[in-house]
Image 1 (cartoon, rainbow, N blue to C red):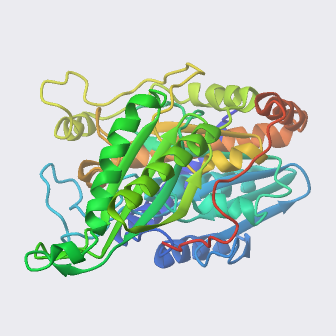
Image 2 (cartoon, rainbow, N blue to C red):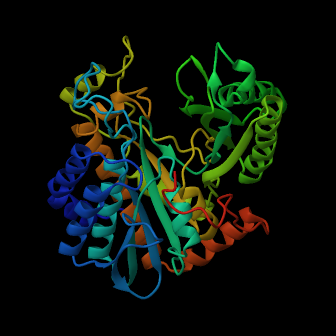
Length: 443
């Protein structure tokens, strides 16, 4: 449980962690390029006496920091990557990028990584036995950093894994959509679009036909699945037959096996589009995320610790601040309560899902924003340095640290959590959809 000793220690250190979080917000870096952000965390952890292993998983910005010794070994996962195009001035209720078309922390990973690091520092300072391992995990946004780290064996020897995510409400985050990102490159023949179109073979036509085919496919896949796509290269000006076109598709479904089945059908649509246009298609899986495996033992612990802190208390100034971002007419512009339901419908994807297949895991969402704030938005970026965001960050850190200390004081919890994982796996083995020859950051 969250002790008064833990809360007192945290209170004495809050400002240090807020400075770290804000510094990461101020230097937003996208997947696999988080050099300043990961370096800031490593400098902080060295000063706290953690032993660092870097890089890990074949990823330059991934690292592990360890303190303590022996069992149990508690893994705490943090992130620090930003999103492209979400640059935004802090605390501004209108869209005003700091730098146009530059990255911004629209998913709160400056808070996520700092709170996880904060939890690791607090738990390591108070633990009487066992080992705390903080994992600096890059490229959650589209890059599947943790999936590559799992493939490299980074989490071997860990007994449990804990994490969290900023949100505009607070609840367990123990269910997620599996996800695969596939790149489709179409190769045709260039020709003058007016003088000799018969000599050309349009890669753009192939891409368009693929999109039409996938629109029809949507009727014949499970309703919980999602097909998102974007053009990465539309092929050039309108007066030529485009010889090249590049698309990316994100396929989501509740289970990784379902994603694999749908991916096979989407690939067939792409091949059919190439056949119809006498072009060729190259199909490359860039990244993939497994669905989260819930763990009743650890989820119960996380919720019990969270209940000690909720409802969260906000000042009048914070309430008015949130009102500027909430939907007009909203009576209470900040969610103060905790949703205690254990079955949460999946709404997003996370590569923490891959970790949860091999290590008993638990994850929470904690409110850091005004009510209704969408993740991956400039509004989320804008609020990322606010006292509301900091309050959510510290709450998440206390919950994770309290849970870690519970496990360290009662090592029998590890066995119960392992049995829970075996039950939900039901004999199924972890398998990533990412081919063995695909390297981190290859797209």
